[in-house]
Length: 365
Ligand SMILES: [Mg+2]
Image: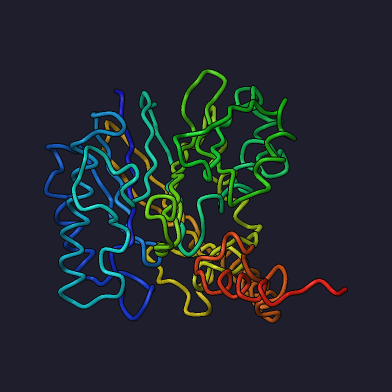
């Protein structure tokens, strides 16, 4: 049975700043989506990571489908009405266009979609992050399919050892989708060369050698759409697990690194990406970037789960490690590597100040 997974997310308002949606907003979105179970969609799950609500839907309509994207868009619109009624902060902030035009591409919400022939057992993971950018997963996505010390399947399993093909997008290109395909392990070093720059090059997808989709990631750049800063892009990704693909534990293990990523307070700092449990609020300590992992099984499009993959005690130690890394970085305030590059700053005041100061600079005679 050919199934499409659609994970669509948006920040439509939060309590007391950029923290988390209210129970009423979540319920509004969930009720709106669940009403279509057995009609437009087979099954669905609705949750949140920090201030972003994610909607996961299973269906047979394919990707970029008007009915499916329209359903999510309208659910977010309904949720926004509730957020406005409650006076939530940033109500409707990720809904950048007024009229729906067929799909949510370029309209604000981020999304990852994948269509495939369902296996007898179909385990997959949805990763959702908050307070970071589209390339935040780059290092982990590299480790999953290129590094045998994180994915021993690359040397243990004949099927996994065959290798994979990455599609990488240049998200700073605004005239269309500019992508490159790289096969690993052969082009592993070229891939690393691109993925180093998390603000520009983003893993959009990974396929097996047979062309089967294994991973899809959202690649939206909100400021490219709005022309100005409107919030962080907070990526969402879907990854299929087991059999010919890396195992669930291999896909989760790279998040143990808790790498430094751009995002955080005012979308302009560098802190460690902390794995958190499902439906966690954003961190009130400088909006430390967070990521959650929801594991599902699927049969004929029906979901079982989620299992909260970052809830077991091992991840408590990783949370401590991420806290330590972030605190070390925050000790140096705005200095050097602690703040995003000037181009990535989400507010204009610093650039304006630099432009003003440039006028005062003079070359000594
Ligand atoms: Mg967010």
